[in-house]
Image (cartoon, rainbow, N blue to C red; front, side, top):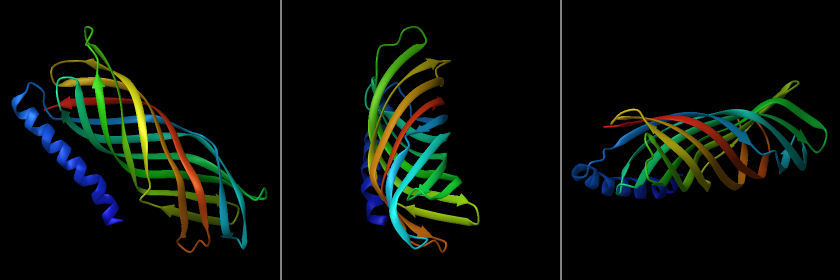
Length: 220
């Protein structure tokens, strides 16, 4: 796990260090970007092994949920920004195992880190649209299966994926900017092992997310 984390953190720190050299001599500054959003996830299918002494197919239905995060970034030039950040996401879930066992009071949640690049178009008045994309790395992902007399939990880490996004900034002044963004992310082939006494595992899960989010960007 530490080796996987270093593969993400080291390039991120080097890239942000390069961006810092520009920020010290250019007109732009480093920035912080907290954000919150509505998380929408696709329903999915997976395989389960040795849960309640059985194996087979698992169907997972997901409701809308919550996403929030914090990014720190800087500018490579007047149009391109590089950002490294953390994100938390949680969606309520209902899980059916082999068409029989139902867990209708759980959730599917994650902590992840990301490294994104964004291209900003010409500013029109106070508005400035942008597009971008990047890589994601899961620090932890878990799903809780709750229902009846059972409470099972399965988790994993280390998987990587990607995200793409488009948004628009609204400049309030030289330091503060409001932001709205639509983001799509995808991580596939996730395996989750039982924890806290839960037996068995879930395999082959996908993590496809669509987020409508609002943020505040502060340049310093």
